Amino acid sequence: MYCPKCATQNAEDTKFCRSCGSNLSLVPQALTGRLPEAPSGRRRHRHRDRDFEHGGPAALANGITKVFMGIGFLLVSFGSFFFAPAGRIWWFWMLIPAFAMLGKGVAQIVSAKYGPSLTQGRAKQQCRRSLTLENYRRAMKSSSRRLALPSKQPGS
Image (cartoon, rainbow, N blue to C red; front, top):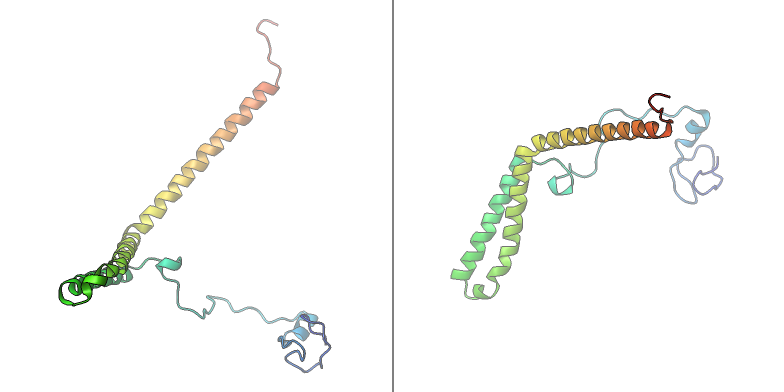
């Protein structure tokens, strides 16, 4: 049996290529045309479900958590300004994560609460746009047909 990756000849009963190490267990099944069926349903993911920042769905609980984390950063920032001896030097740097967390939290709460209605509105708008585009195309076709046909003079 030859490795499909590097073309090295291997024994028939080997599971991995001796040269490149690729998996050869399915090669005999592929040659006979009897590959096992892929498991149906949801695929297993190595990583956790995608969160809101990485294209996942918005969750109200995550948004509330981020808002409270932003408030916590604000409290630490102002607390360091008033109570820490060296806090007057670096307190304003704590405002960056505070406002970032507040902004992300508010965005996620709004997306979780109003996201489905906003996406339905976009779908309707795209449907209207495609309908008007289709009407425009029809009108252009009919006008080009009118221009292509010789016009008859009245009374001829």
